[in-house]
Length: 355
DNA sequence: AATACAGACAACCGCCACTAA
DNA sequence: ATTAGTGGCGGTTGTCTGTAT
Image 1 (cartoon, rainbow, N blue to C red):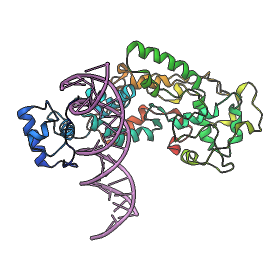
Image 2: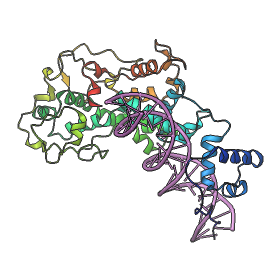
Image 3: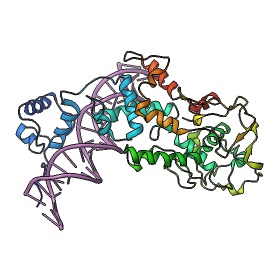
């Protein structure tokens, strides 16, 4: 035999709380505390479910709640914590005094998430957009489907997108090692569970197993000869029968890519194309060819660690030449954030095209 | 001025781990 | 040992408000 039901749901009020109800709830809790939410509404004389009372109190009426806009420092903290903890809003809220999990969750979904997307960053993984990465996986999907076959896709997909995707694809195999290393570190430090960690790493190369329903599988592209000018069109195309095996072009020897495939001003990137404001390696001097076998020194890990490592922030974040305060304007803050997480690839193409 | 649309956020829903009975 | 309620959490929805047309 279990406990009695928490409340009889019939006849209980739902929807927005009135000031009178708030007053009753505050009064009651100030006098009696909030030990038992089941009996609280009845004792207080509220026609509400105990759960509703608890939510109203913890998310809105609690005296220690800080109302108003999030400061830039708070926003920065949320991003860092989210990169470590994922959508564990209560855990994030525990590190932001005066803020509730609900408030942080709302702020993330309405502000931060969109901001990261605008910057070309996947708000779930805190790495460059998953759709771009997945496209890179498509391109890298098998030994038979190497980079040279992109030429056959030129009229199907935005060439710039292909270039970006290939750029990212070159990092995939390296990421596997980094993932394993980070996983071990996470286990050692007990930062987060493996499943959480996986959510923060770029996908391993798993062709034909999309990580996200929105993302086409590798055997897609049914609408040949239809230029796809941006990623949204690509994603919404009816693409089911494309078979890379049917590509007619020969492979380039030694997996070396003709430099003419890249923009004239292209320079191989360090740090996976992230232009971290601190610690990025200088570009290699030889830019005549580009190795597509993942031998370049790009590193998403640097991004992840820069965003997630408590030691890297806020000190280093604040080391930027632009000093922001709580009074900084929204534009200043956004500009500052954009610089923090700027892609080098933005130098060679406009990522916003794909957002 | 009216309408449509988007953004913001409060509140609800459903699930899960814990635990009282 | 089992059952079922409680509290907590994350995801989603509903409503209000501001802005654009």
